[in-house]
Image (cartoon, rainbow, N blue to C red):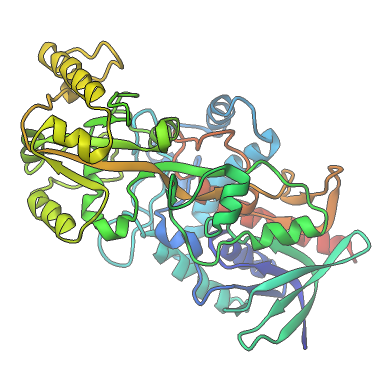
Length: 483
C-alpha cells in the first residue's frame, strides 16, 4: 500500500471534477484527482457547452435573462421543488464561469435560443475542428485537462477511489486502487466527489427511477458512471436526495441506426402510442417534454410515423423545431432506410398498407385507422382541434409505403443522489454538514424538480462546471479554517 498527501482530493475528472481541480489549483492548493477511466471528460465529451447568465457574451448582445430573471424563471418552472439558495448561487456564478473558461482558452460560439420559448443561455463550445454541435465540449475537456496538469494537479487515470476515510465527524482522505490493483491511501484536508451519477448502472436505474435500461429507457451509458461517489458518500452518512433520469427521447441503439437519422426525429411528424392514438402536439420543441409524454404511454414507447410523400419532402426541406439538431435536408433518406433495413435494425418498420403497419408495429389497427382519418381531416382543414399543432406542420399521412420508428424515453444520464447545501457541502441525514466533504455536478444535481429546465439550456453542464468551482472555493475556505 502506498500513501499520498494532498490538500484536496477530487474524485473523478469529468466536467465538474476538472473544474474543481483547476479552480483548487489556481487557489494554490495541492490537488490529486483520481479518475476511474482511461480518459478525462466523462459524459461532457458527448455534450456541447454550459449555461451562462449575464456572461460577457450575453451582455455584449444585451441578451436576457438577467440573474434575477433567470432565478425567477428557474424556480417557477420547478415549482420551488429545489434548494433556492443553491439555485441562486449556481445561476449567479454561471456567467463568471464562462469568463473563467475563456481565460483557460475555451472558445464559444455566439449564445442563441435553441428551443422554442428558451433564453440564449447555452454557450456551445467551438470545437477544434468543424462546427459547434454534439461532442463539441470534448474540446473544452481537453483544454481543462491540459490546464490542470500545467497547474500541478496530480491526475491519476484508471485509479478509482473506493472509499472515503472518516475520522470522528470529518472526512480526512480516501482510499483508491491503482492499475495494478494496489491500494493507495491518501490523506487530505478536503474531498470533492464529482463522479457523474449512475447512468452506467442499470440496477441503480431500476431501483431509484423505476426504468429498465435497454427496455423502456435508452439513455447514454458513459462507461464507469456507476454511482461510486454516491455510494461512498452514503457510507459516511450523507443524505440521499431523490434520483431521476435526465429525460429526453430517442431510438434504441442510436449508434446502430446512425447519427444521420437524428434530424428526422426532431421533425413534427405523427407520434402514436400502441393504441394507434396521438398523445401530444408533435411540434413541441422541448425534448424533455416529449420524453415525459412517451414515458406515460403503454410500454413507455411510441411510433414515429410518416408516409412516402413526407419522406420525399424531407429530401429537400426540414422543419427546425429544435435548432440544436439541424441538417439542410435528408437528401439521402432512401439510402438511410435501405441501410437500416439491410442491417436488420429491429425498430424501423416499412409497410405497404395501414393494416400492415399496424401488424408490424403492434399498434391497434382500428385505433390507427381512426387516428389517421381524424388527423388527415385536420390536415385538410388546417386546424388540429385535438392538440393544436400549428397548421404549418400539418401534413397528411395517406400515401404508401408507410414508415414508423420506435421512440423511447432517452437522455443523458442520472440526476441527484447526494444532498448538498448552497456551499456544495455534503449534508448528513440530520441536515448537518459533514466537514471536509463536498459534492458537485451530476451526483448532487437535485435542482430540476421533475423536468430539466429547458427555458435555460445548458443547465446540467453549467451546474457541473460552476458547482465544481464552488466546491473548490469553499473547500479552500474550510482548509484555511483548519489553521
